[in-house]
Amino acid sequence: MNELHWLEAHEAAALIASKKLSPVELTQSLLNRIEKYDPGLNAFLTMRPEASLAAAKEAEDIVMRDDTSLGPLHGVPFALKDIIDVSSWPTTAHSKILADNIAEKDAEVTARLKAAGAILLGKLSTHEFALGGPSFDLPWPPARNPWGREYYPGGSSSGSGAAVAAGFVPIALGSDTGGSVRGPASMNGLLGMKPTYGRVSRNGVVPLSFSLDNVGPLTRTVKDNALALSIISGFDTKDPASAELDVPNFTKDLDRGIKDLKIGVIRHFYQKDMIAGDDVITAMEDALTILSDSGAQIQEINTHPLVDYATCNRIILLSEACAIHQEWLTNRADDYAESTLSRLLPGTAFSAVDYVQALRTRARYAAEFNTFFNNFDAVITVNNMEAAFPIEDSAAREKYYPRQARAPFNVTGNPALAVPIGFSHEGLPISMQIITNQFDETMAYRIAATYDKVTQWTVKHPDLDKTATLPAE
Image (cartoon, rainbow, N blue to C red; front, side):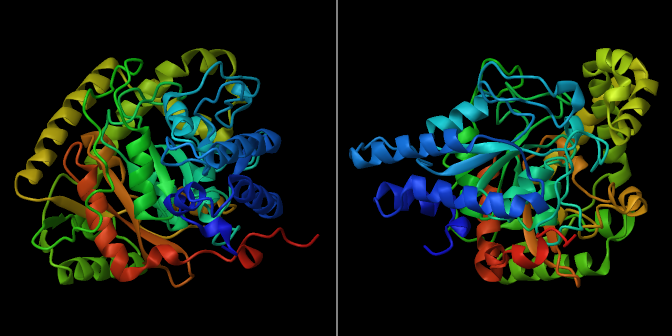
């Protein structure tokens, strides 16, 4: 109880429900931590501490009245990537273009978290419109990595990753169009879920690519991630891609083990298509050994080269993004960050034929990839090819930013869970992905939980006094 900032969300909720922890005490503790350390990390864009404390007091009053209908996150703080709407709050997408944009109502995921009793602490940094890179030419600075503020925290849900890793909140939501939940999870040592396309509503979320966008949670533990996904999932008539399916309890198989599960591993992504760093390859092989020793049957599999998936993702993403941004690109191009424009403008060169062919290729790739699940319970591959790079090193950004294996699973639509698997020789987190059949996120969490019980990577946290404080002037 001396370190409230490292409490797991489900632990905090249980303590609050049993009157052993005050929501006000928890919220104030996290606000104090944010005030102390966030000036060095830039995770938050917008906060309303008085409103957060008022909501915490209301949550406490409900507990003290012995209300038996408490939600699963009653009194537990959370935060949102600033492309997700909260009624009467700004949704800026970290852009000058939307600097004055005020949301009229909650996004569906915001409403579901509030209905579960969770308390909003604030809105988080992102890459501009969830697309650009870590930019220093925007109204707000980019988020930094709690494991070392000189390092990149991943993107585009950069503030979400930094906030959770720093102990500012136990749960944050991000979006994932080409890997933007799993990237920050990788570089911050977190769990990050890109759910099955259609599992979670995007209603009230600033779009980037209509057919690739997903919303998912970042957490420090497997159980919290599964709990958060259980809360935000479900059919929504206001999202045309929303799947009309029952939502399971994603935490139900966490203690089931993985004996006799069949797991395919895509090694060619990181040993042939794009050669990963030595630390990553070693950590991946160690992780596969642990899964095998835990009872799983591991077999190497082959699919399309990584570049083929990445090209398909890029054509679809940029074509749809240019359609969304058409008016602003015409009338307000100077208001974008340089890095955002450099990524958006190539999309204007794609033709309708390019886009349609990419959609057809996507359908074929998805169908082919999903045949693996006729014989396998899950597929595993690397996440990033290296650990985090220095955020202010433009040459490193250009070299390392695209070196990842996440885009294939936006193309196929499968759930993909980022799981920490160790640290580089510099002490920076390394990650793998667990990919499962459509709408079988439960299996991904089951495998991750078994692995985590053996390795305990998720109990390691950055020391912000050493890694996140601002340099002396």
